[in-house]
Image 1: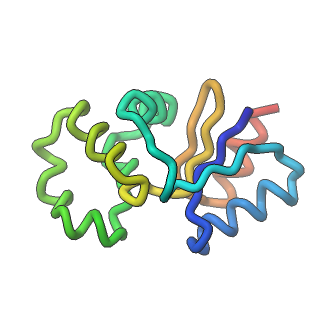
Image 2: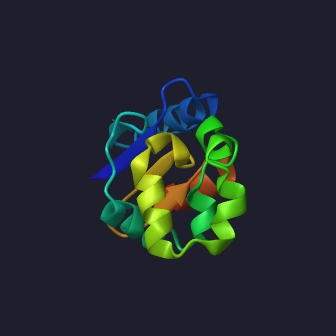
Length: 120
């Protein structure tokens, strides 16, 4: 099952969801704001994404700025980063599309098409 983590008020999430719906992709919709991630889940998403840990942070978010994570991130070890991300879903870049084997962070239509085409 594909898990689609999003924030319903986010315009980028709405575009990604519209893409999935138009391509008849079946997914489980999960509200990233209210879902309580564990650091183990964040670690798995990070590993599946193949991206640097800083790519998982919502760098344009209010919470990111309030916690001054931009300055802290260079000194964080991975476990600390996982814990911080798990503490508040709004710190996580959205949307997140997670499958059994992979994860895609954010939304770029060309990259989404490629990612989704490899699912089937």
